[in-house]
Image (cartoon, rainbow, N blue to C red; front, side):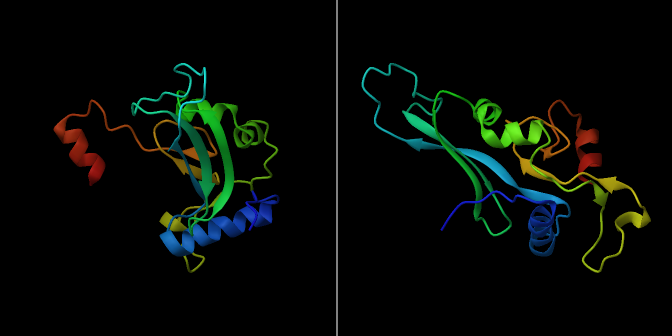
Length: 159
């Protein structure tokens, strides 16, 4: 089996339709994250591969589709580098930054029946979801930072 990043807008839309159908999450092109793979320290590597988890590792950076299938994989960056640093240096980031990944144009959010959400024609970018280590950009959505909220703000955010 071959890991293959979607190459066309139509292929990306297929990924987004699967996310919407399976997870009720429209315009989502994948989930992006890094994972430390524990290794034996390479000879004479010093602390280069030593990570915050207090072990030696390389980082696997991956994007998966709605069925957890790998669409993109970058492995081998030393474990000392954060997910954000690995992503900054990977080929997927380069394609997204240069706008050469052939992502679909922003589209109105629709429910499963093809009806517009919220009764509006507002458009939303197609995007990947990622954790707080990644940059917030049109093509990457990350969690809202709930830090430094009062109790009242936290409650109103949840409601």
